[in-house]
Length: 329
Image 1 (cartoon, one colour):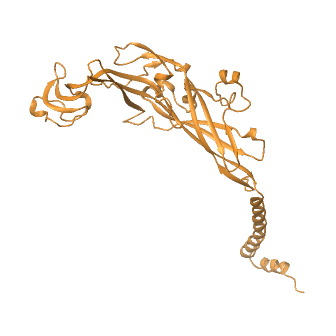
Image 2 (cartoon, helix red, strand yellow):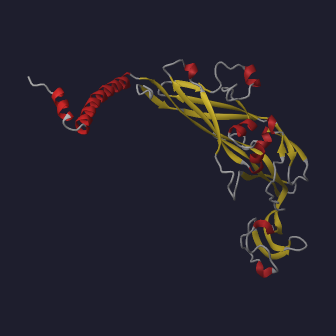
Image 3 (cartoon, one colour):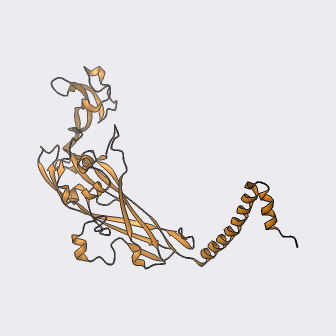
């Protein structure tokens, strides 16, 4: 009965969409360290993902790159970049950021590197020591989770029928006080995953956002409600390639018809949804099978007890047991 073997079950089918709101401000590397104000259209990239969303916490912006020649970055940690003359830079060899032209040129007053054909000027890749964007306390995400149990013809969503517009605009999820509020503070999600927000935001992370639906359809459908859980999926103690970052570009053509681009590198937190669960409903067939199995087990129990008694009890008590079990007529 505890396992509800008298019911038939169906797994959940699900979709998740999100809407992030809030304002960030801070310094963008590569933009003469200017102060910028970012809204959700800037720091949520891409605008929509399948069962996930990403929020940027640090940005390196390399502007106005063109296809030209420039010195390769000596900090790329690869042999064959620093040079003393042309013979160290074989023309056509692939470097990290481009293709070698065969010339050895100054990187600065003391170091020479192989010249490359690439998108120049090159990005100055400096891992952050702290998040460069701030005001994260303003960030919230509205999570809309639609689930279905097609076997039973049941559909539910995490914005419950009892929630009105006023509550939706003012509530924030809390495990005890507001367990069914679908609006989550980004800082609270990271905290509930057991992580320090500022440390997590510095190099980025992947946070698992669990939504579980376990529904007993023998009761009122209003009791079919979600349960949320959060945890960090990547390892914050990784020695190399720690956190989460990626690059993308915005390309354009100037008035002379020359291709230009802005290269943007983002560090941030990626939230990944995992929806699980099942629904159960009374089944007469399963109920009869369970009853039949129970009766069979009761009969088997008596046989097991008899075997143990006859095996474990020593004579002469064993003979007494046999005499009480069998009567001569």
